[in-house]
Length: 209
Image (tube, rainbow, N blue to C red):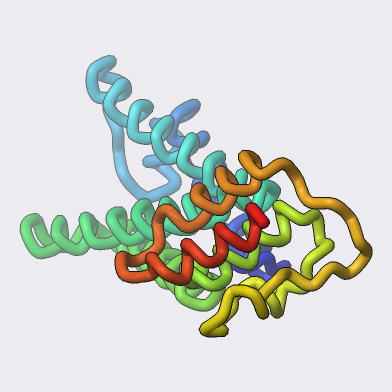
């Protein structure tokens, strides 16, 4: 996912909603259902089921909120938010179809869940990033091997003669050992499509040279 203040704000809003209402349902299930215009008996088994669902919602909110502070978690957080809110809203729609109208308060809550689910889906589409191309992977490996001493533009060579394709030194810094260079490149390009053999072999030769 792209790093963006807008994405962080969306994740925080979604996370706070899940944590507040999930925690309320976990700690005070009777009060939560009274707020929704519903009556909940004090049967221990029923309360246990309601608290369990509240705990899942609250923990989901914590994971969603984690994505606002740790970028590595942002994609997981957005996907989880989409799953939680959309599934809650669609489950309530199914309940209306099977059981009838649950009341204005519950329908209002369902509408909010679907809107927040749509917001999470919007964030996923707007801030997602595509997978890096094989050229970007090779360029990243080249920069890692040479520590910035090789111009990124020279990392992919289309010359017919390898003698004309030596990496261009910027500051004269020596490269790492041959074994380390080869392992770095092969690790970076191991996931590339089949058919790149000649070019990848040439890149490896450049690093070992």
